[in-house]
Every structure is written in structure tokens, then in C-alpha cells.
Image 1 (cartoon, rainbow, N blue to C red):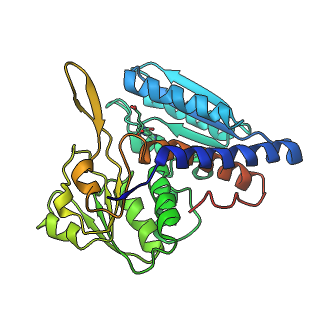
Image 2 (tube, rainbow, N blue to C red):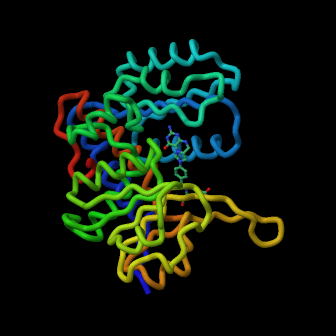
Length: 296
Ligand SMILES: Nc1nc(=O)c2c([nH]1)NC[C@@H]1CN(c3ccc(C(=O)N[C@@H](CCC(=O)O)C(=O)O)cc3)C=[N+]21
């Protein structure tokens, strides 16, 4: 049986570290880090999620600014709001909740965010900085995965890592980070030939495709570390639903050396890293040293 990598507990530790440094910033410099979250439309899942981000932001002692806009908000109005947040000295981090409605060009909105306030790490400048190994804002989900991998392995140097999924939000930045740790990195996707064989070689498997339980335990090398990024809602008992990952947890846990559960794995780490990035952005904006252990 494998070790369960408890993302919920790990995320609580990260948030405690963030809270400690936020308190120190206030005491020593009179600075309060601030995070602005922009939500367009009234998708119930996004509402719940944005509310929980706001709650955790306040819990670590940061200022939380929420902007809820109507579904039919124009791209021009959204760009104007982003421009205003870019100029606001109390706002150190800006997150525009994705997906945006179809009539808005999401890339245009994201690239309008000041790169140093882009706590999602989605701006092309941050993508370029990460890709070239320079100091960037690193996307929250891959950063959370990296923190768990480092905590479990220490050095990742020379390990074979397979990232399943090539999204800009998880797969590609995850691959950049693993390469930065000197892993041998393979990015697999829907057109990959013989995915089971590719996964069987891996010391580290990061599954980020959004297909419920698509990775069976039989593909996992004995002792490998499995990071499951998928959060898929599927029918459960009766008329209930339940959350499952991209990995079949029960069978994978029999072979893996360590594995993240869903829920309670990568998800909570994503939010903790959003707070860590906001703290980092605030320190950089204020010319103060970066928080230790909370960046890539
Ligand atoms: N600009 C932007 N940045 C994001 O980071 C972003 C986004 N847009 N849009 C939506 C997705 C989704 N996302 C999640 C983060 C944590 C959990 C999480 O904590 N999940 C819990 C379970 C929550 C539940 O019970 O439903 C867990 O895995 O344990 C889920 C989903 C961030 N997103």
C-alpha cells in the first residue's frame, strides 16, 4: 500500500506559513497583501469556489476584493476593470476566474493583467519567464504539485516524469517545472501512442486531463509517485454525485509508492498556492525578500 499525500493537511501548513509572513509584513512594514478576484457570470460552481477563495484569503490576514460581474459584461468593461486593478496599490494579485463567457477573448483579458500581479501565472510574460527558467509567477496547480513532490522526494533529479495532459494551465507549466528539477519529462496526450507503456516507465505520473479514472492502477510502475490533478464530478449512490480524479485511486494505491487523493489532494494546494503567490507578488512589489519555501 502506498503513502497518501495529504494535500489538505499540506495546504493547511502552507497557509499557516503564509499567514505568519503576512503578520510579519504588517508588523514590520505596515503592508497588507491584497488579492482581487473577478468573476463573470453566475455559474454556481464558480460562485462556491470564489467564495471559498475569499474566505481563505481573509483567514491568512490578506485583503480580499471581489468583483462579480454580469454574464453579459463586455470585454471592454472587463479590460477597464483589469486596468483599474493594475493601478490599485492595495491589490497585489489579480485572478480572473476562468472560463470566461464565449463573447470575451480570455487571452486578451489575461494578457491585460500586469504580469507582476498575475498570480495565476497565465500571462504570456510569465509563461515565457517560466519556460526560460527565469523568475516568474508560477501557475498555482503545478506549483502545488511541485511542493508535494519536493516534500516527498527531496531531489527529483534524474527521475522519469510523465505529465498526462498538455493544457496551458497545468500540463505545460508542470512539464517546465519538472524539467527545472532535472527530471526527464514526457508530455503525453490524447494522440500519444501506447500511453500505458509510456506511463509504466514513469517514476512520477502527473495526470491532468479531466477524464474520470482514465489511468488504471495496472499502468503504474511499482513504487511510483502519482499526482492526480483531475477533479471530476460523477454520478454516485442514489441521486448523489461524487468527485473522482483522472486516476483510479483504489487500484493505483496498490502499486504507487505515494499518491494524492481526490478530493483532498491537489485541489486544496491550488488555493494555498494562490495565497502564496499573492504574498510573493506583494513582497516583490514592495522590494522585500521573497518568502522562503513558497515559490518555485
Ligand atoms: N483563473 C482561474 N484560476 C484557477 O485556479 C481556477 C479557475 N480560474 N477556474 C476554476 C478552476 C478550478 N480550481 C479549483 C481549485 C481548487 C479546488 C479544490 O480545492 N477542490 C477540493 C474539492 C472541492 C469540492 O468538494 O468540490 C479538493 O480537490 O479537495 C477545486 C478547483 C481552480 N481554478
